[in-house]
Image (tube, rainbow, N blue to C red; front, side, top):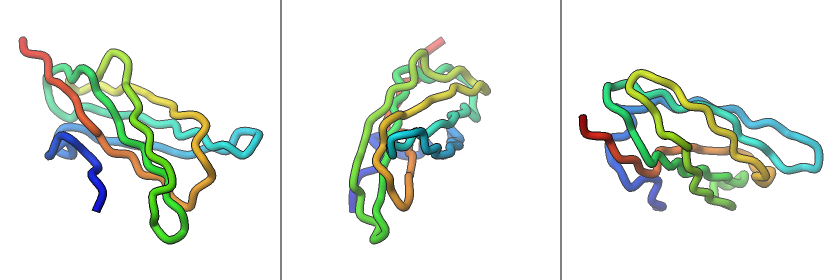
Length: 101
């Protein structure tokens, strides 16, 4: 089993939504948003993006930073370009740090 996060429990703090588009040239672009469902500002937010083949094997992994992080109750947008054609794409919160007030 592969590691999908460095921060257990991120699913309670964040909601991820994404779609995959096919610009010209065959590469794919994954566009989406991350929404903070709790208070406090999350800094240094990084996502793990995986592309999987028909058998469910990961064919590419990419760590993607969210510039500026995500404020409590707010949404930040991201776009991951140049992904390979794949049967499935998955996105996880890799890690983040909470700002102390």
